[in-house]
Structure formats: C-alpha cells, structure tokens
Amino acid sequence: MLQELNNFIENLKRNQNLTNYDEASTKQAVILPILHLLGWNTHDVDEVKPEYQVEDGKVDYSLRLNESNEVFIEAKGARESLEKHEEQLLDYAFRQGVELASLTNGITWSIYLPTKKGDWKTRKFYTIDIIQQQSGDASQKFIDLLSKDNVQSGDALQNAESIYKGRLKKVKIEETLPQAWTKIVDDPDPLLVDLVAETTEKLCGFKPEIEDVKQFLEHHREQFVQTPKVTPLPSPPTSRALSRGRQTRKAGRVSLQELVNAGLVRDGQTLHFYHTRPFTQEQATIIASSSKLRYNRDGEIYSISQLATILLKKHGFKHDDHPVAGPLYWKTYDGKLLNDLNEKIRTQRGDRK
Image 1 (cartoon, one colour):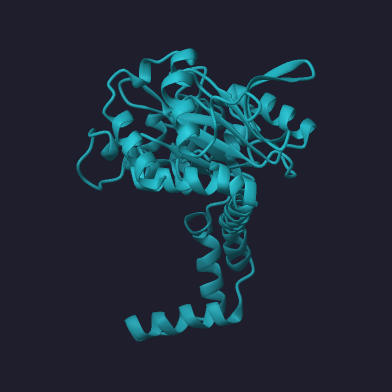
Image 2 (cartoon, rainbow, N blue to C red):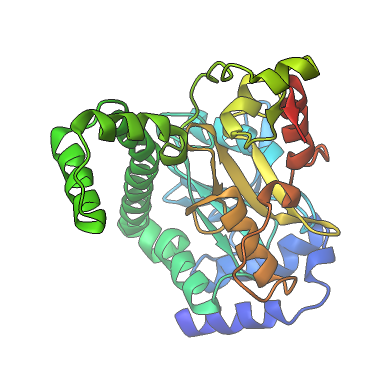
C-alpha cells in the first residue's frame, strides 16, 4: 500500500494541470484514487457513500463500515481556499458523532477531530500536503490516519489522538514560555540576579549591586519579553523635543495582539504568503498571545519574519539566511497586507517614520 500510494503521489507532483482542477476533476483524479489506494472500495456506495445527507446539507463522502459513518470527507477544487468550509464540515461531523473528518482540495488535506472541545481551528490537528511534503511522509500519514484497515481497527483514531495531544502540548508551551519569561523579568528570581551579577564581574572585574541588576532587567524589559503589554507612557520630552512641539516616537514593532485589539485581524485568523503574487496554499494561523504564526502545513510555530524567510527560500525568491521584514509577505484573505495594517497602528501611536 505504501509504495503504491507513494508512486501515485509522485505522479501527481508531476501533473502540471493539478492546480487547475475543478471540484469534479479533483474528486475523480485525486480523491477517489487515494481512497482506493487506502483500501476503501470506491465502487461500493455503501462503503464510500457520495453526497451523504446530513440534515439540511450534504457531505461529499462518508467512509462507512458496518453501516456506521467513520470518516467524513469534504472535497473542493484545487484552487479553492478551504478555510471558509471548515466550520460547516465540523458541524456536520459533530452532529453525527463522526470522530474523524478531512477537508481537501486534492492538494491539501486538513484532518480534524470534530468531537474535541474548542473552536474548529483547534480541532484541526494535522495537514497533509501532497506537493510540498515528501511523498513518503505524506503517504505514511494517509495510511496512519485514513486507511481502511486503521480506521477499522481503531488505530487511525489513536494515531490522530496522539498527534492532537502532542500539538496541544507544544502550542501550550509556546504560548506560556513568553509569560514565564515575563514573570522572571518582572520579578527576577535571586538566582537569576546573582547569575547576571557574577557573570558581569567575570567579564569586567566589577560586581554590580543587586539593585543595579534589577534596574537593568527592568530597563531592558521590552528587549527580553515577546508578549505584548500595555504601551508604557513615553519618556519625558527633552528640551529640544519640547521646542519642536508634539513629541513623536520612533517607529516601533507592532505585535499581532495590537492588531487584534484594534480589530484589524482576529486571533486564529488565517493569513497567506505573498510575494509578487498570492500563494494561497501557503497558509499560517495567527497566535496573538506570542505574536507568532502557526504554519498550517507542518503545525510548527514561527515568528512572522522567520516563516517568511523559510517560504522565500522554499519558492526560490531568496538564497541566504539574512532576516527579512516579515509583515511585507503576509496578506489576509481580503487582500490586506500585514505591513499596511502595522502602519495603521504606528500612525495611531504617533510613531516617527
């Protein structure tokens, strides 16, 4: 099964027309063949049931065993964004008690645990991308999560649960680390203060007073802490500034939390990568609390600039590791560039350009 699926995905990667398929072509040329290779009898409408009726709507495919719905699959055309269809699919699956579901445009397969707690974005625990991922990796994940044998034995659900719990743990740690660091800097542990003082003495021969170390940590707090905090009052203006009139601030960094607070974006909103043209398949989710993005293809969390650099290199626009201005490369689905939204915040703050 693994080798056959791997070969099929390799052929899909070489298909120049794949990204132009409409929904019907995607179903026929991609989705049904993959389900067949995963052991499902695509000729048996009682096992792979098309247009399955769910109260006031339909799901494209219900994978069934012993007359029981095991997996819901919703299909879209290759060019279509999946985000706007997620909530409906999960609502259908939740109401039917279906514990595994996938939303796919043939290229990207978002996989969910619909009956879990939390919003629908939280319940998406993995994404398979048959173009961007290694064929062997994508094939193995298809088998782990959607093969008939694993669904029938319960292993698919166990594999899904394991990934889901691991991801929740990672996300929680990523979100909490900045808070922990904030607490350390705001109320430094004596061991940390002593360590800084002793290291300073080793470097220059003079040991600073404990209060000097604490003042240093507080003074440089914004350099150490990534989590957003209430904007401090500006420093008292110098005599030169007073002579100029209104005091302005140097243009500073804008956090994603500030954009959320201003109503310009939403926490959990999906952005897509942009460079000369939109890359709608390269999606990332906003994590406002840490001002970072979760890359939807691998579930990993990156800074805005770090992920932009990775994707610029991936698509051949960049060949070095020099940092870039990340907000220049991310757009909302209504076409707003993150950098332009940042400028709105800077204007409101009165930052100097």
